[in-house]
Length: 451
Image (cartoon, rainbow, N blue to C red; front, top):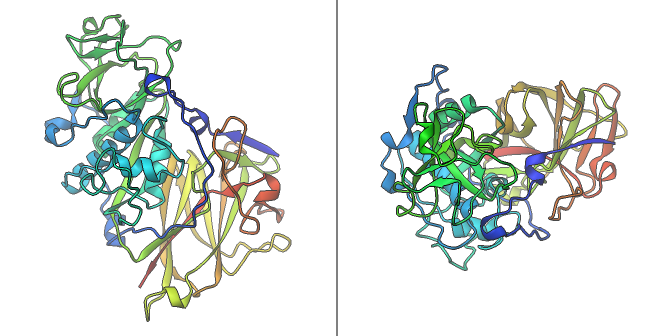
C-alpha cells in the first residue's frame, strides 16, 4: 500500500490567539446541489486567461469599489471564513459584475468539517462547503453571530473548482488578474511587533520560527513598492497588496502591503477557479464529504484507476417526464496529470472489472479541483446504479484522490463499502477502497441535471 499525504490538508493552521481547529465526526447524506443555470453558457463563458506579460502594478480595487468588500471579523477566530467568502465575492464581481456579501455564519455552521467562531479553520474547509452545494448564502439571510444553520436556504451561486499553488509569485499575479484574488496565510498577532509598520501599512516576516496563524487575501501587487517601507528590510523592492478582515479602520481602508520576500506569502495559496449561477435541477454525487486528504498509488505504477458507483434518482424523485443526465465529473489533482474518464451504466464488479466506454481525456495542469464537462450528456436509467471510472497517469504513482482517516488528521471521515474501488486498469486488479484503506472513499464526483 503506497500513499502520499496532501500536506495542505494535514496542516492545521493555528489561528488568532493560538486556537487550534477541533474536528468532529460527520454524517450527512449526499446533498442535492444547485448548479449551472445555463450549462453551456457556463462552459464557454469562463474568465479569460491572464496575460503572460504582467504589469508592474495592479490593484483589483482600481476597478471595483473597495467599500463594497470591506469586512470585519471582530474578535472571533474567523479569518479563514472571511478570506474564503471575500475570495468568492471578488471572483463573482469580476465575472458577473455583481456585488455580494456572503454569510460567514452560514459557512461556519455548515462546514463539512465542524467548526466554531473560536476554533479557527482554513480555506479547504470553506471550499468543501462550496463544492458540496451548501453555500454560499447572503449575509442578510444569516447575519454574523447567528446561531441558525439555515441549511434549507438554496445558494444563488455554485463553486465548481479551485486552484492550489506553491512558491510561484508569477502564478499568484496571474490568478489575481484572472480570478479576482488569492487567499494565503501569514503570521499574525495583535501587536505585530517587528513585523508591521503602522505608518506605511507594510508587513514582512522573514522567519519560519513564527507560524502561520491568519488567512488574508491578495488583491494586487506593486513591483516598485520600496523595501525601506518595511520595519525589517527585505532584499528587494516589491509587495503584494493584501486585504485584511478587520474593517476599514485597520491598515489603509483594510489594505496593507506584504513584501515579496515574506516567508509565507507565496508558500501555499488558493484561488476560486469557476463559479456558475445555481440551477436547482442539478445535483452532485460524492462520497468525499470533507474533500481529498491524500493521493494514493496502486502497484507502484505511474498510472492508477479510481472507481465510484452512484445510484441515480428514482422515478418518484424526478420531475414528471424528465430524465437525469450525467454531464460532468469532478476531479482533484496535484497537477500535471492525465485523466481518462469512463462511464458505464450499472454497477462495478472488482472480480470482473469493466470500466465501460471512455467519455473524455483531459490533462489537469494545475493542482486543485476541476469540474470536467463531458463532450455529450449521458442519460441515466432512473433508480439504477451508474459507474464513473478515472484512469489517472502522470510522473508519480501517487495519483488517485482519496478521502480517508490518516495519522495527523484531527477529524473523522467514514467510508462506505461496495461503492468505491482502486486498482490497475491494465491488469484488471481492483480492490474495494475500504479494504485498501479503512473508512476511505474515492474522491471522484459526478454532476447531473434533469431535462
